[in-house]
Length: 160
Image 1 (tube, rainbow, N blue to C red):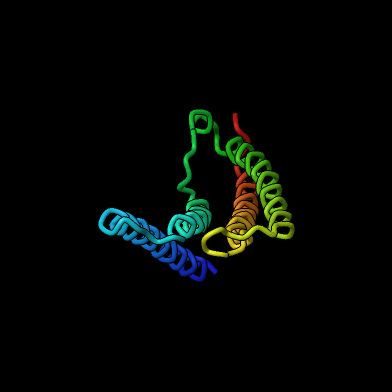
Image 2: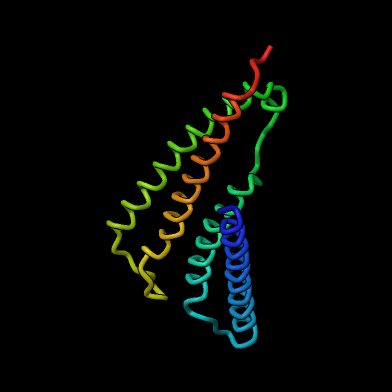
């Protein structure tokens, strides 16, 4: 299971790098075309916006799984293992709530939107798909973390 997750994580990183390279290429080409020929790629800006949303939310999955997100640890550095596990469990429970709201709102937007991109003609539903994927993936990651934290809390000796 861990090996499969590692392979998925690596594939996700390469896919995000590919999307980022595509964004850079489109912006560079658009800039050069405007500078040299006074014209550009009409759908370039909108396409880059779509790619940016995809890159951001797919990268969130990897960052969250590897616990590389920004964390302020002024309080948690001073907690004993059992208290830290309980505190982390409670924080992750609140994160589940927030991820649930994000997931529900994204699904509602996906189901209700009929907007189309002006230049590309792509439906805005395409922009919400990575949000749904990221919210669901992070939800599962948090549930796994909560199970580990609960086990740590139950097995750790009482703090004194």
